[in-house]
Amino acid sequence: MIEACLFDLDGVVVDTANYHYIAWKALAEELGFEFTLEDNERLKGVSRSQSLEILLEIGGKQFTEQEKLAMAEKKNALYVSYIEKMTPEEILPGVEKFLQELRQNGIKIALGSASKNSPMILERIQLSAMFDAIVDGNSISEAKPNPEVFLKGAEKLGVLPENCVVFEDAIAGIEAAQNANMYSVGIGDPETLGFADLVIPGFDGFTLEKLVKELIAPFPFPLRGKA
Ligand code: BG6
Ligand code: MG
Image 1 (cartoon, helix red, strand yellow):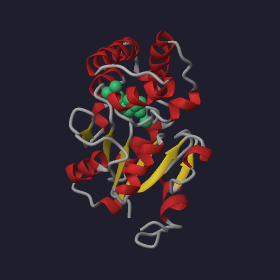
Image 2: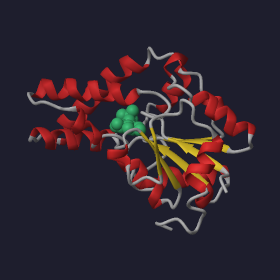
Image 3: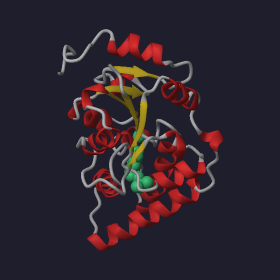
């Protein structure tokens, strides 16, 4: 039975995954190497400092901790310059409608994001009020694929993990949902996220009825493959 839905933010509710990409790409170019869209998949859902480590590994570069701190700050300043201009129009198609449908059906809603910039984004897109609980990069100590962010969300909502569904665009995020023993819905490409319980291209036209039919009905807890 679905009692709660937990949503990642970047790349699920808004297309900030692209802003992250162009900000990291600018840093890579400054450091003299190429950073591709494919490389970017490895950064999705991963914390700022870990993202930088992966980026430097891709470029084969090494720096002191102090230099790395300055680079992460520089990337974040560029990223913030993009997100501070965001408006509610940037909420991805179908998201608001789906959130409203969940609410009307008494299903609780939480945010589970690694981003420390979540409060600013939610404020800019005016969506904070839709969430019954918010867990973000400011309140977690372990990054996805650790399940902490989603387990904290479920706890705040007072719902058992097995009655939660996580919506995620990142490999690390789907792994975190699985590690939390929650259902997982991948948003994006089935080739990348095929190991999720269900993969959808986005929320446009997606409904609670479809969620129940395509996700829960074939795998009633605890009979689903991984349980
Ligand atoms: C995640 C993004 O939501 O947040 C990652 O998918 C990002 O790409 C991480 O690195 C941390 O975000 P921020 O805004 O705190 O740098
Ligand atoms: Mg994401």
